[in-house]
Length: 448
Image (cartoon, rainbow, N blue to C red):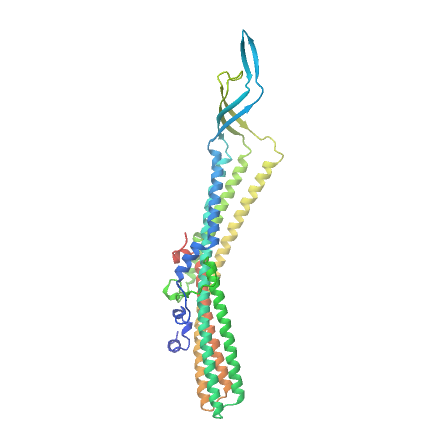
């Protein structure tokens, strides 16, 4: 920034354009809110984050279901029934009960799959499914926090835009009063007054639009933090947090390093890698279903004494082997499906890696552009302010028309709001670069 530009900004020509005064002090009233507090509230209360946590719980439940196939199953039974008693006369006054009239019983069964090779890769796949869900939870949470940061910045600059528009309105009113005074001194035309009045009306309209934009942006921030809309926070300036954009962009060499690191840091890539490993394990499991399975089961039952159970108890042990010789192509179709999903997951990972590299590079370019545009906007404000001062001096000396002054005033107002917009774009570009390169959560020390 040139010395002249710094003097203009510090002298009050565009104080609201600096991040340090974007907290709305002296104008807005309400509870205070810092950048870090907004991120913390969104992480704790946002519904999307809560739903992602439920997805992790569901993945863990699926893993438990699959793991149960490797563990013994225990079951207990109990029964009671009544039927017509059937007995056999054994002679000599002795009878043997064949079917008890009161039939009751209790017992238990233990079963275990001794050999089922398909279960082993399925358990591994379910474990990778949990890892993928956790990675997606981390990525989704970071996405919510990133959106919160964007909303915070947007609301902050929307509030600053109101200040700029209000100051512009004050300037237009003063300009109209000056023209009215000159009209009384017969130093201005009626056309000058009409033009000044029109500019006051336009400035009033701009103020109302800016206020509505500020309310809407604040409502959006409240919603993403999991709160009801309608709360007006006093937002702390960005310079009090780590969110303020740096004065320079990473170099080409640093960008290349960031791209490589992003392939390791991005949680969505980690989720895709876990999904690929899960798909490969499921593919192996589908092939193992072609092999026979062995299982062991044992049961014990206690009931009334009968012909079949003189002592009232029975027990059995079974060794079972199951081998599907022909299932109508079901297993073959399963193998084809799992193989295709494995290939799809690999293609998805390859594509995502390219997308990540592109995102890091594009956000880096936008950040560099934001820095350049902000510098240009500062120079534009400096030139526009000088031009307005010169037009005022010439107008007072009778060397310029009121139209020239109005045009110069319009140019200065456009330059002020333009600089504000470039400041916001730069801040959003910086946050986007952190998000694309996988540094957002670590940079702000937030998230799970």
